[in-house]
Length: 417
Image 1 (cartoon, helix red, strand yellow):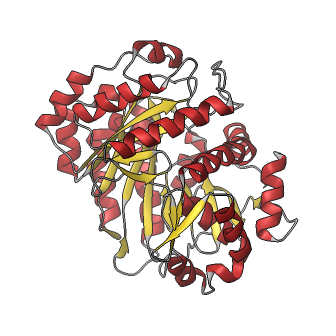
Image 2: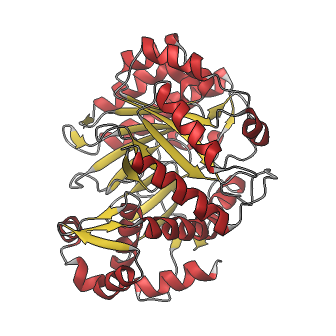
Image 3: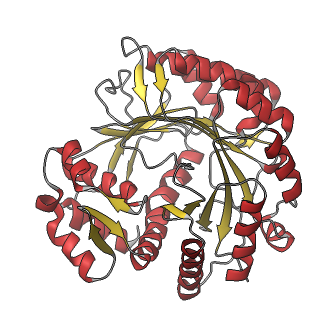
């Protein structure tokens, strides 16, 4: 376990108690009274497996994919039917994997969700660049999709080679997107690759905005222990210089910073499946966050299907939050958007943020990590870098350990983080 994350957890939760996950599965989920509830659906199928990708995925098989989608729809009904009538939710996101490999069945999944939920802020789908074609985009649009996120990673062959990806033609993307526009077109890029410079990233960002994107996400490369990637990590000082340079460039160009690593041409373009107070997750490896618990589904596609076919939710592990643990989780992911509203915190927890973490906020302000404007705490560029730096510790200490175990065991007995 990483010492920085352990000490931070003990300090902020005021307890030596770790996050304890148990092999427990509530068949009734208490989401009816949750506000700002989002939905997430995981489609794990890929044409081939990228060795740097940590997410739950398997090589595409038509028969297995169809069996999985059938089980997924059953899971949706198992959960959705627990609420009388339709529950209002903010957004719906599909991730993977490559969800477009199941494009012909996305309308069925969305229809099942719409039997139980009313989505107010749009439907987003992650796409591999190879899937950005007029027929696929037309199918998505007909199913009700309003946002797409394209995993470009880089337009430059030298970095595509490092990542083991084939080249992406920006002009091909532009032509397809021009024929079938969406409310948000986001393009994802990886930064902190070996030899990568500000000029390289600037070129990728400019290319994205010239060729149909109105939103970009620039995620740091993280070396998960269970992947087969051999890409070396970039030194911290060099990484900070790169992140600061990109932030200054995007700000100078007038782009709106919508999170630590995302920038939009305007305030209306947004793509984020993480910054939500509560959410329900469907599919293998999908997570659910409610007021009192966090749960994660099994990573095994066959076990997922067997569990749902038997009429049970496919939960692998459940964490029962203490009050402080839930506050820490809330603040960590809310801060991802680069701002925290004390009024929203108080509405959610019934206690003022300043009463719970007033000393920590003042320390963060003295260190130049945050500043207060119009009663809202905003993260500074210095704070954004250190958030990113700490997030790397968090990822390797918590997510890496959890996902590594779940990739080996469908239903572990217990996990402590």
